[in-house]
Amino acid sequence: MKKLLVLLVLLAFSSCTPMKRAQTGLARSIAGQERIKVDGYEVYCSEGKVCSEIDVLSISMENRDKGKVRVTFKNRTGNTALFQVRLEIRDPAGAVTETRPENIAIPPTQELSWEMPGVAKQGGTVRVLMNTAY
Image (cartoon, rainbow, N blue to C red; front, top):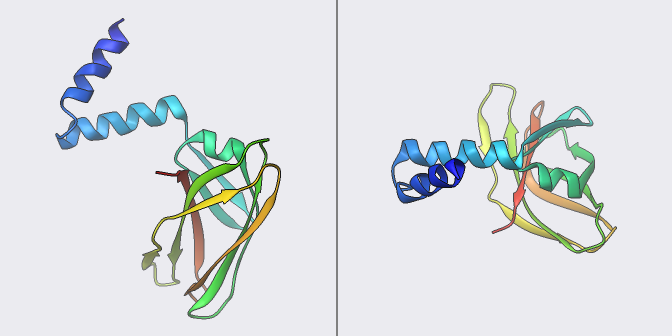
C-alpha cells in the first residue's frame, strides 16, 4: 500500500524535473535495463523486456565517413515484436551523433537486417539503443 501511495505522489508531481527523474529511476528499477556487447559494440536496452524478446545477432559499421551501419535482430517470441531503435555514433575525437528513433516490427521468430546509411564515422564506434515503441 505504501508503494502505491508513493507512486501516486510521483505521478501527481510529474511535471517537476526531480520528480520526473525519480519516476524514470523507479521505472528502470522495476523493468530493468541491460548493456550487452555484440561484435565489439554496445547494445543498451532501457527496459529489460526488450532485450529478453529481441536478440541482436550482429552489428557492423563501414569504416568510412558517411558509411552505413547494419544491425541484425531476431525476434525470440511467438508474437510480432515492435520496438524502437536508435544509433549513437561516436567518432575517434569523442563527438557523439545520435540518429532519430525508428520503430521496427519483426514477425514471430524471424530475423531482420536493418540498415542506417550515411551515419558511420571512420575509426568510430556505434551503440545501439533499444526501447519499447511508442
